[in-house]
Length: 114
Image 1 (cartoon, helix red, strand yellow):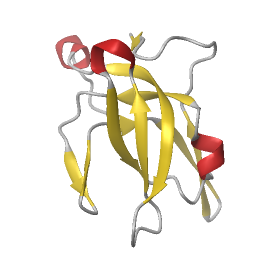
Image 2 (spheres, one colour; image 1 turned 90 degrees about the vertical axis):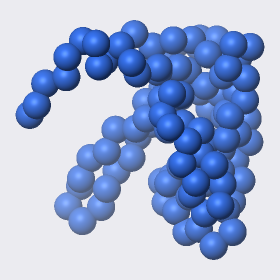
Image 3 (tube, helix red, strand yellow; image 1 turned 90 degrees about the horizontal axis):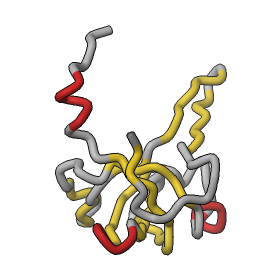
């Protein structure tokens, strides 16, 4: 595995966000459109996430998780995704298991991960 130098690591902006809304995306079997609150400094952002197979809308709404917020925006199914939610992915025989990375304690939206 190739190492990452500290200067590269410092470029990543990881923050806690609270998922305020979860919407279906027309024609997308795996993607949700998430409206995520990152507090006063960043505000709300739209993030597309391939979680439909693993989480219901009800399970996601109101959940706090860790996001990469300075990823370059990318259009997915016509929606500009402005970040990425972080998850652990494990392979169990023929099935993937996805577990969101969440803060252990309740912390304020926008809290920086370091």
